[in-house]
Image (cartoon, each protein chain N blue to C red):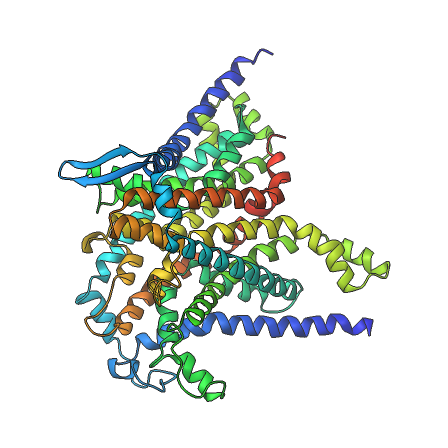
Length: 301
Length: 278
């Protein structure tokens, strides 16, 4: 098919308009990812003249896979992601369902829900660090005044309580965002469907599983994808709130890569950790993407 | 029984609403209250639930003695420039994808989605070596360029939806009248897509304002720290100076909260239109 002159000119303009954005993305994300893979297969030493690369195949991966700290941080990050994402989705869905009706103050609620999303995670971490403080933290004060505990507790002092405390801070900050996505999804479901179901004598419980849940799947998939990816990049919160401690019990996989590269100067093994993380994230994203596939298919039409 | 159900639902709705608002606001209240307390009462147990003698001492300290003013300047410069660049590049790219006869639209969109899933740690060591090689560590471009690249995919996704929603006849009418592609874009279509452009811009700005990892690795010297790095690395000799930290934090939270509340409609529509409807 011959394109008209006008169409050809528009197509050329189109590529010209597209290329600056694609060039920046390729240079700053795609190229470095490839370079990361290359770096992870080299022994890298720092010398006076700069960094010396020496190809060493999968040696760095051997170092990483033999390190118990790697498996520990991988387990911690996976468990942390699983728990926080599930809790945030369930909690966010419940809140969204409760708010998806004409009640007064909903506009205000949506406005307030936006605020934690805009909060710098580092500030949130400092805030919770002060609240959890074992000596003068307000959480101990509140729990002691309602007699749940009798003596102040060092929330960030044991591995289990530090992990739970960090999860709570995450859930506090992110659930409102998940709620917003789900509430937006709920509002796209036509109310006629529920009315029809009601006339057919369907219970609220049945309507939820037959109408709400299937139609909300794209929103749930999107929220889950966002959150899983974010959780696997977990860095800011443990860096400030616990610094990975006590010991290394709350160290995330991104923190391990950061420490290996920038504290120990082990560029090779540190980059190998980063590459493994990327591979994992891609696998997880492909899983979540199934929920979005219809969306992508619609673009060309 | 049936008739009462909506009533019960409403009551539950109000309880959830009030409970959620309290849980969201309480930590913020505590942060602001602490920033107004004197040094002695910050470390008290039991803590006083409100500042008995409110003082702006910590605010003055944060901006005079400590470098919060510098952190602010850096954050504003980096976030504003990155956002403007993202808006321009994303508007051009998404217009082309939504409205011009180019090939491979679906692969491009999938590619963008895939790119936006990569964690920052994936690129950190090469980018660090590159920045070091160029002598760009501790500079504004060290943050602006990665921020632009990492925020473009989402901005393009959001804006494409808006451009796709504008009737095709408008372009044709403009071109029949003799307008070139760029004239059509800037005089006819862009004004109609303003909500999409705002949405992409706000999401980018929030992401830049809150970003920590790149800022920590590339710009850790005192003069180039952004607010998150400044607050994370801010520590006293013996105790954590919470008063000063929270004074600086409160000031850091205010502008962005105002911005987002002001443009609330567009943020919400970004979540609905851009993300969910596709």
